[in-house]
Length: 178
Image 1: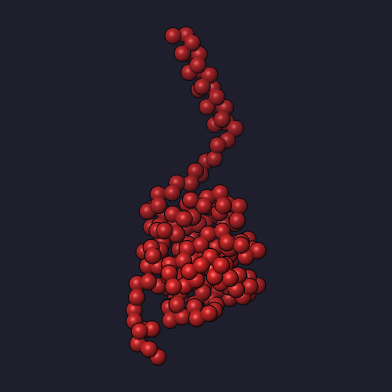
Image 2 (image 1 turned 90 degrees about the horizontal axis):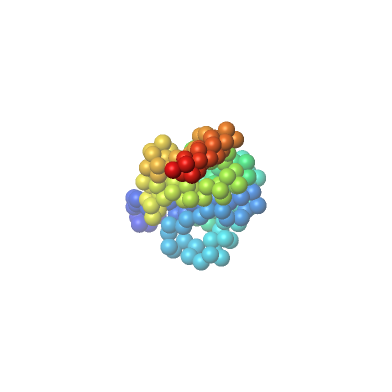
């Protein structure tokens, strides 16, 4: 084996992407410029991985000289890709961090519609976990704290709308009386 293949590197993540249950891309980041540089190559790679993994119960796959760890949730498939020599546990820790952070941001509803509605938060999470292929964080609580993404636990209810309308009426009334 070549010694250059075994040299340690901080650049452990080659790609990260999320596909829907039809294999369509929802979010993707490729960190290795030599790996699938064109959009067409990326789509073909994603389609190959999806075809190999969407019916499997495994959590790891080896394809085209790469190690792929993946997880499915309702109608989403989350993938983290590293080199063939990469430690699967490192890749899995990134995948778990991504999933847990998304679970919090999407209010435990990790599905296509929720992801599309909160895409900004998803990209913030990905950018806090990985920067240029380097793993920055693998603790979901730290990621959520860093992105400072606040999820409103009390969505707007009928009572709060009524309170806002009543307050607006009172302000209009006072401005007319003045």
